[in-house]
Length: 384
Image (cartoon, rainbow, N blue to C red; front, side):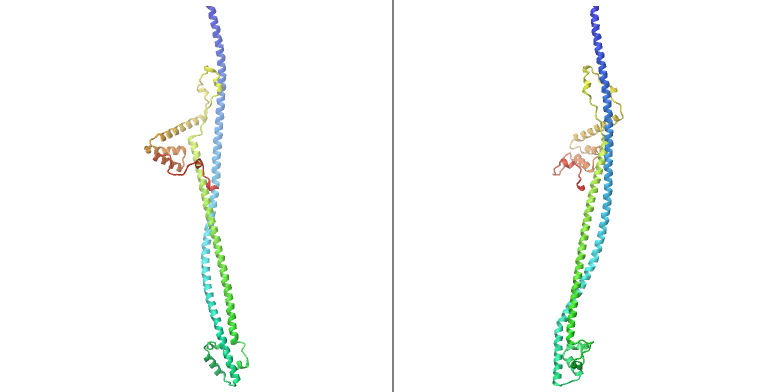
């Protein structure tokens, strides 16, 4: 009996020693796991802090660059608008001045044509004057040959009565003595030289008028060319202003998108990864005890983690409620739209789409254009 008890005592002692040894090993492994969990938690907190800091820096950098670009675009836009206004005023002034110049040139051209026609009429009348002068010389020659000398007054009256044209040219009549003796006054031109003088004068006036008309036509074409260049510059300035407006609009939309992303991150939180248990924790076998509350590291970041989990859970419940409502429950869906828009920081277009879904209960728009994944990317068409 005693031997049996001693044998059982020895077995119990051996089992106790093995259990104590196993307990020490388990305790050592548990301490290692605690240290590993604390290290992972610290690394995760540091990585999360670095990620948040980098995200804030990136967002602030993008906002600063966008603000600088928008300021530059606004300055360029103001300059182009001023230049366009200046060109418009210059073009209006050119139009008014060119209109006045064109009217003046047209008046001068009409006067030139009228004077040219008058000179041509005078030139056509000059042969008649030559014939009358020849008849006068013939009469004088006949009078000299026949010896019939008349006084100067009689010959002058006969000549004037025979030719009405000579009555108009009284300043050009000369005494008969000067005609017979071949003497002529230096102040009075002869009848033969007066026609030539009128013809030469008409030709000179015609040449001057032609040169004036050519010069005025060249000035008119030059003014029209300047007006065309000014119109081209004005169109280029208007196109540049429109392009700058489009770029400013796209940059403003990008800033709003970054602000919505930041607001969405602040609303939902970045979250933390739950610590993953190591396979070494299972080496203690079936006797492994469940870790108590002391194994969870206490940190201020776990408060953020719990609030993030709460917000995500709330958002999940809102989504499930929104989708599981029947099609005729439009009022309940409309009441959930502002909550989703606030939590997700939706844009006005996305909010309109959500309102359409809440009102119709259909998740497809009436447009026939196919939607691809590239349609969800931000548009940079104005910056090309």
